[in-house]
Image 1 (tube, helix red, strand yellow):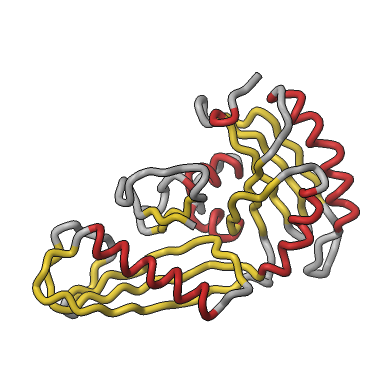
Image 2 (image 1 turned 90 degrees about the vertical axis):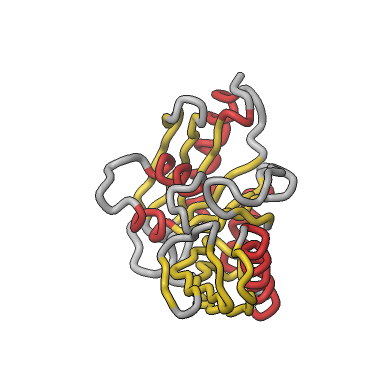
Length: 234
């Protein structure tokens, strides 16, 4: 039996392809993979095909891990996603910019999106620029000292109603989606690397892009805020 903490299951859904992957997080390899190409010209998910695909694969994965599959990460590719650009400014009065100060800005950004876009789920939150007293930086330094601090970032999100039907399908198998990833974003980060999609997704979730904020489910993890990259509880 495989311990739950030693693997992650990814479900890849687009209008043209379905894929499911069981990834070994200890040995960094794919333990199980199945893909199905779909011939379609419209941006709609065929849920009958999805159900057949899940019926075929979930039992095989559960037999392999020796237990029921409870959680899954959804990798989605669709034209229905949204990109929200934000610019947040704060006075700092010559104080040192530390992780606590930065955390407060990131929480403000996340809360701003949730308040103004209540019908979306956040997939990725990426800082594009740090502006310190008018000077731009592409990465964060823990020793910034300034009067004015500005953070430019974008939020990659997806409408809740778009994924609600996928949630409903998976609930029939007592499986919960615990994370959402944008396939286009993943592929863009690995333009020149020929590795499996599940490996790309795992790397993205574990800090491949140092400027991406990590959104961690509260019940799954409880670590300090500032590690190798930013981390917020979703």
